[in-house]
Image 1: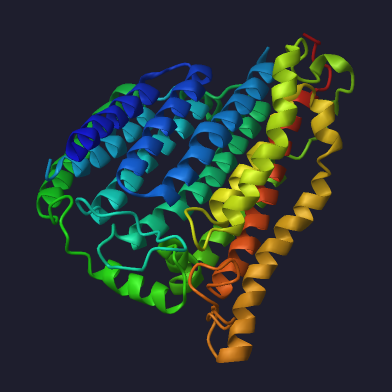
Image 2 (image 1 turned 60 degrees about the vertical axis):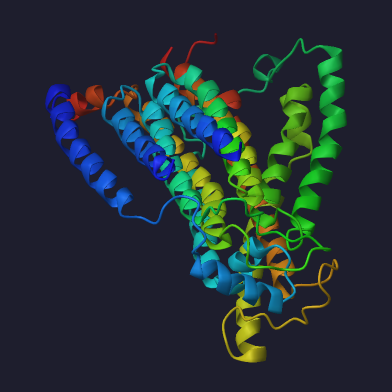
Length: 80
Length: 115
Length: 251
């Protein structure tokens, strides 16, 4: 059962990571990256690493996507 | 399943690198780099995993036992996640500066500007 | 190098890495095996210093010097990003309300933001304070504290956020956290002869004041990370919302 959960989560992480890279528009990437962060958090929990999961949850789903969105907004405004 | 987690880690590294290579936007490149970096987290935690063992956190009531998942790789991973986020911030700041100076964040257009 | 050549080079290099990686992975111990020599040693060392969270013991006690290095990378990145994002001469500040964040927020959303703020701050503080016993610590708690702060942006206006966020104060806080970490290291030399040695009495298993320096270092890192992330986000917000190039048309 544990094994099955791990296989599913690992596959999900690989798929989500691929989706982030294949998303060409950076503003949509902020959203896919946040989703990728959630799948990583779940994987870390399943791998018995609550400390790491906490770290990933705070950084991967809030901090980094927020910075990416702000950076895109600035770059867009500079160009138009 | 004996090696599958390692392959997932390798996949993340390669797909992230591919993202950097085919990127048409520096911000896209930075996010792809973050994906490649996540590969190292998966690899480290996979190395330290032990089947049917609890987390290496005993709380205030449990007595310590060595039958847990490896805490050393977890310590390496958790600091790196936070530190790498600020490195991502530094790279995004660079991209913003480049956009300000050159008016584009496409690596190919930037090369053309250099002449 | 044009795109075609670049892709070819990657195909060659990436393919080679893939082959080597698969060969290397097949030579590794199987996933989930029970042979972890480092684990056995670090659990014993953590138990000796009364630290139930072995991960925190590894980070702040057993390899404290490495963590000082990581923390320095954090410190340098924040300073570097802050220097890059300083408003330049060509930019001017925009003070009218239009750029000031999300207007037309639903009252319920605003209310949720105000309720969530103290909650997240409390959770962040708890994560830092009990990092030596339960999952958590300065790194995670610091990020939770800093992002929790920005719930205020969702709650309504950038101005509210600015009022409760004196950036200069947080810049000093970041320096203070970094200095605290290094200072504790030197205190270790003075008291027991080695850098970052655990020289504070370790107390009883699982009690709040236990684990010696692990707890104090957790707080130092917590302060540094929380302040560093707030400084970073404030610069990003300023760039994205407040500043625009001189002479640029208003949208």
